[in-house]
Length: 250
Image (cartoon, rainbow, N blue to C red):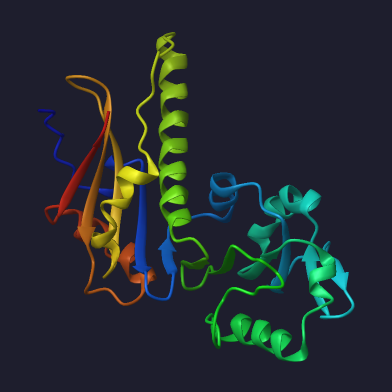
């Protein structure tokens, strides 16, 4: 059995992410997730209808009076989106579908941008959206509605695997050694740990050197925290508590 080094401070880990899943309403609250990580993990995204933003180079839809990002400009938008302290968007298939939205449906979109939740469903048949995305720098949180909740497992797995690949590339360069296989985790495997996120949990990724290279994810239940930004204020204190679960990635 691999014995993990006992870790005490935030700097001993590669990455921390707070996850709070509501599987009934099909949304997940993240803290520590970047917009660029989301896009890279779940690409390709189609067009994005901007409900709240500070981006100045978007296209304009006359029918809804909303700005939007055409599919071919999504990568450009991602690079500039960090300038938006608050960001809310919904994906859609093509502009013709925007022109079919009724006043009531447009009102529902405005409600989402203001209240960060839908009146009825966050998924619009005309738009065929997979996501509703909201993030706030002030609150240090991202709230995402998933049409298919399995996409949340795919998102987390791809983010973690990307961080692991990046770490292995950097260590492989200095050691002049090319690894034949890089540890990774599958969305299906990660799904088995959803229960820990129902009341909010911190996932902390780190690298294990011996007896062989592997990675670990410590999971700590944070049901006593109501606001994600508080997690980061107390991070080192939280990490002094024993983890509730440990996942090995070999």
